[in-house]
Every structure is written in structure tokens, then in C-alpha cells.
Length: 496
Ligand code: 5AD
Ligand code: SF4
Image (spheres, rainbow, N blue to C red):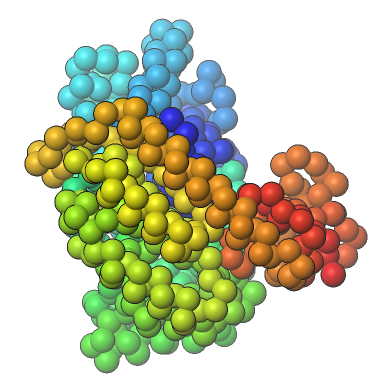
């Protein structure tokens, strides 16, 4: 199967299975080495940074080489069957390390933990500890239990846990962009999706802690934050948090914090539009991105806020899943084709020059050729800048698995997928070509993958831009790049 892959959002293929490395912790370092590798979405990679932070407090060091590790964690994803398969194969490789070093602790974290805990512990004897996404604070105890010869499990989901007070250790970071989790879980119950079962109920994180984390990142030199949640548009914070520390950072952060306090005190609470504004106020030099938006919840207010602040990037990831209203209803997406088109029209009206990307599932239960054509015509209507495209994969326990038959033959799923992948390639190229001759404001991220004679960075619309290295600018700075040519994934130009 071929998934069209775009870095940074949803599943970044280039990072799948990446191991994270952290500077040795000072203090009560007991010298044990932690190896942690992550699969799945940006939220999982961000969670691994929380795990590393919790364990570095306990004196763990990280290593990028699992053969020297004392503890191996694999942070797993359940979203599609092939994601789970990948993790299983990897776990088998760790068996070899365990045979060599019987004291080695092997743990499964994340979304597969709840679903497969019994299987992992009983059938696949190699796993010592299984920990769900809301139980990472319990890791030090769980590791102690394993050290004393027991298996350890905590897959309890929480209604409150947001890890708000834990400042994640940034791993494998370029020091320029960081992910900041603003909420956890999901209440939407899309019928194909396992996330509400693996990550539990939706809860929002205290806005003051989000602003504090982003301010701290800015002060450390970071220039871009991506606010993460399964459905950022339903972000809501009502509780009054009197007594929370005022910002120690810039004056602007003080302004952001008092905006939040005013909203909470007035009883209105902080919604996503307010939160975006609070983060944007930290500094005009800090770019703000966010993912994922939900078509049913994205409001005009959010769009006006994006348009109002230059540092909130003009880029929205708005998963459509299907362009057909009957399929959308079966998917329990709670919007129909017309509603989605209305949201796209609102984006085009309110934010001139906004890039839009999407997720599409082909071959959902009972989808006809004509219904698939509605997805194709939606792509023609929107002309997405990027798309992540998937064949439907039935997940145990989901509403679709209970209610509907996974009855579209594999060849048809594949054919429909290939058709939309080809279509998307055309539109990605079309969108890129439309930038030729324009000047893009680019935040330099580092050398391009192919050559250290070129820098790369992203435009406001999230396009990757490549241009020659120069003496007058360096990573972490903004430059204006005149676009001279493009591929379907990259803009190429020179600094002006
Ligand atoms: N089968 C295929 N794709 C899925 N996604 C979620 N669940 C499934 C599934 N069971 C896709 C959706 C979602 C993205 C993160 O993964 O398109 O937006
Ligand atoms: Fe899954 Fe739907 Fe929630 Fe996204 S919004 S995580 S697809 S249930």
C-alpha cells in the first residue's frame, strides 16, 4: 500500500521508529540507560518526551543504541493494522537483546497497551511492563516492580491527566520547532477510529501551562510551536486557576496570560481561538501551527484569529475522510458533504492564501464506486495542498467493526487508493507551481536532506523550501525566498 506522506502532521514516515536521545540527567543519576522509540502520530512522539522527562528525574540517561540499554520502551500506535504489525516485528528484535541480557526491562507504551495488554504479558513473555498513555507518571513505580521480579501493568485511562506540569525534554530536536500538546483523548467516536478507546476521554490542558511552555521554548531559541490535539477546535478551559504563576518571560507573555485570566474570570472560558491568540501574543517571532482541526468544530472565530495574526500560519489540516454524505454518516463524522464544503468556502473567504491538507479513507464499509467518486470530486473542489490517504483497516472494538461488514475487496480499496494518490500528486504539484515567482517567508530549520550547500525550511503555508546556504542567515532565522521552481513536494529558490 502506498500512503502519501507529508512530514510533521499526522504520521511522519521519516520519524517512524525513531529513537530519542537526551543529555544525561544531573543529580541522582543511577546510570541506567533508557532506549525509547516511537511510532504513530506527533502526539505519540510528544508523549515520549514526557516519558523521558519523568524518567530523567529518576536518573535515567537515554541512548540511541538499544543493545546497550537497561530499559527498552516502544511507544506504539494502533490506528491501522499495519502500524501494529510494525511494532510486533520490532518487539521480536528486542527478544534477541533480552536473551543476551536477562536483566533488561522491555516495555510497551501508548495506544497498543490497553488493547493488547494480556497478549503482551502472557503470550509474548518478553514484555515486562505495559503502560497506557495516561499512566506515565506511574512509570518509576512500575519499573521498580519489574526490578523486584514482577510484571507490571497500568493501562488506566484518566479524565484529568494532561501532564500539564511536566516540562517535556525535547528529544532529537533541531532547537527550532517543537510540538506542544494542548489536549488529550477524543470524544468523537468516528466509527472507524480506535483513538477514543486507546486514549480515552477528551480533556484540555490548562492554557497558562501551555503559554508558559511556549514562552519557555521561545526564550530557549525555538521559533515555531505546533499545538497538538486530536480535535483542537473543541479545546475548552473553564476552570479558574487563580494563583498560577505570572509569566517570567517577555512582556508579551504577560499579555497572553492576562488575556487568559480575563476570559476565565469573565466566565467565558478559553476556547481554541482564544488559545491561539494567547500563544500568538508571546512574540511575533514565534510561529504558531496546530493540528488536527475537525470540520464539525472549526469556527469562523478560529479563522478570523488565524487571519489576524501574521505569526499564526496559514495552514489548516482538515480531514475530510470521505466526500460522500452517506459514508460520512456511517463514519459518524457528524457533518455532511455540504457542511464540509461550507467550511472550505469559509477558509477561502476569511484567510486569503491558506493551505489546506486532509486525510482520506478509501474503501470504507459498503462504499460504492459512485460514492468514491464523491471523494474524488471533493479533491477536485478543494485542490488540497497535501493529503494523507489510507485504505480502510478494520480496528477491533470500534463502532464500525461492531456495526458494519468490512466488505470492500482489497483490490478495490487498493485501486481507489491509487486513484486518489495520483490525483493528489497532481494537485500538490499544481499548488507548488502556483508559488513560482512569489516570495515566501521561510523559517530556516537546517541543512537540506540532500546537500549541506542548501538550507531548508517551511513557508507560512507549510511548504518545504530549499535555497542556497549564505553568510547572512542561519537556522532559526527568517528569510524571504523567491521561488524559482518546484517539485510536487518542494519549492526551490533563492534568498532575496
Ligand atoms: N482505517 C484507515 N484509516 C484510518 N484512520 C483512522 N482510523 C483508520 C482506520 N481504521 C486515518 C484517518 C485519520 C488518520 C489519523 O488516520 O484518516 O484522520
Ligand atoms: Fe479518531 Fe475521529 Fe477522534 Fe480523529 S476525531 S481521533 S478520527 S475519533
